[in-house]
Length: 327
Image 1 (cartoon, rainbow, N blue to C red):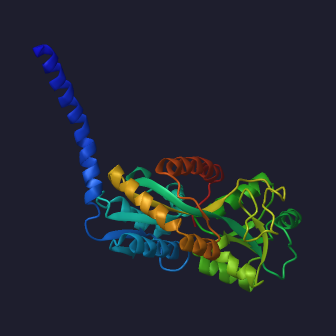
Image 2 (tube, rainbow, N blue to C red):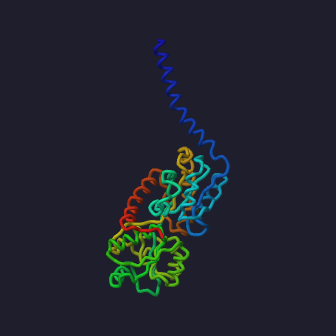
Image 3 (cartoon, one colour):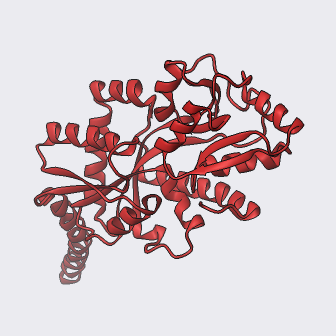
């Protein structure tokens, strides 16, 4: 009987030992947040990432009452802000909301001040296909027309793209896979890119549907293709590149949330749940759809990490094989 009691005590003690970390983790989440929460946006105000972050911030404050600020840390195609987020204390007080170009930075910059592993994938908020636009004075009705013209006039068709971007990599892939010589012109920002396509300095430009939609709606440019797997409700009459027989990969602009690696998982899960609640609120979803033509996603950390891995494998290979430079 004494032996039985001793075994019972040992088993019970072990169970308590296993339970203690779980209790501690739950307590950590219960005690969080401790003061002001900072959401780093590694881009300046304007564009799409900053307003997306501010919409999320406002709804989170409304739903939770938390003290949340947006901290813009632009520079290096998002690398400056990403480094600050990566080096922040993993206590749940610092987060980062960024754009799809973030995952290409390691391929374009050999000496980044952080590693991918320094940041934890929390969730994707949403995505939108990219749109390809032609100046209305040009004869192109589809991107297939652009390819056909460039095959007749190698190097003469100018295509504006953002430097160090997925659009640059996609267009380089399209050049190779379709045996066409397009003259790619890299830009440092969406503002100058849009200015030049509106002025007819470039024949064609590719950018996020978010930034190009106002100009398409006003008929200042003509939509000639979208880069997703399917047509977008925002441009139902504009065929995908796949429909047009253009060889390449489906491509999307997207927005995602990261945290410093080592942030306790219960805190990650709590923030994930609150952001999901915020962006799935009918008014926020409507705003994202109407303003950004966004498909709201709210993926799990595991889904987001797997997506980043597959996208990096795909696009890094194109970058290496074609020796693509970020500028």
